[in-house]
Image (cartoon, rainbow, N blue to C red; front, side, top):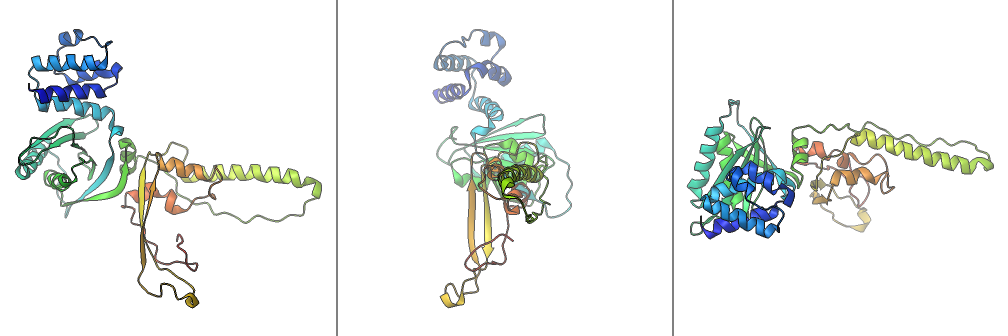
Length: 346
């Protein structure tokens, strides 16, 4: 085992929380139980990592075996990476039979034919998820084990979750290999990204149940009230309004926690209408813009707007339907503006 592999193992161990190092090494399976018993997990993590690297050197662990430990770590802590959702499409009614061995063979052959220096690891998990780790090199350099791409593919579904490498030029190669290996025709990126892989799965696999807006606000009815009861009426109206907001919020977002999304964007196209006397933008071409939202927890942030008094209840369907629209690539188009010089929701 060379110094590069030893250093990679040492750095991987340093990422693992101290109380989980032994468990992950046991799951990894490349060190015997007797070797694990010789490790002192109460010393500094730096010393633990050096001892683990030494044991791996004794066992002649290679880089592909070392990469399995990194897959185990990323499977347990997927939130350390940013994930994007891709959807693959078929041209006809092809058979849905999936052969894992054939998938691996085609995937590796496609990538290795385009790029010689590449390291590919597969690992299957109990939820029919295939985790793929790719370390990219160049025609003249060995694969960089610290700038990897990760793919999570659930067989029998058209959805792929990709955490791309910082080497963006490798993404087209990766997508081509996925399409060929899974017998699909093409692949498209959905406008859906998050650190929370499970929330993305909840949305695209429709495991997230959301009730869509059916509430129509009614105008307040005026009543003749005696002056001495004004204060009591205001208190009661405030209480009723809070209860209404909570009820409407529950109808729109549901009772459970929201999927954890961090990014969303709308591609808008609308006709800009202005006063003819102002002679502003007197053209018939639509006005196009891209509206982006970001938050550590986007859907929970939207859910909290009305109760905090920052927005009226119910919120615009353009915001409350984000999980549903995510499955349709967020392609929401506004055809026509209503008020002069403004953009409005349909």
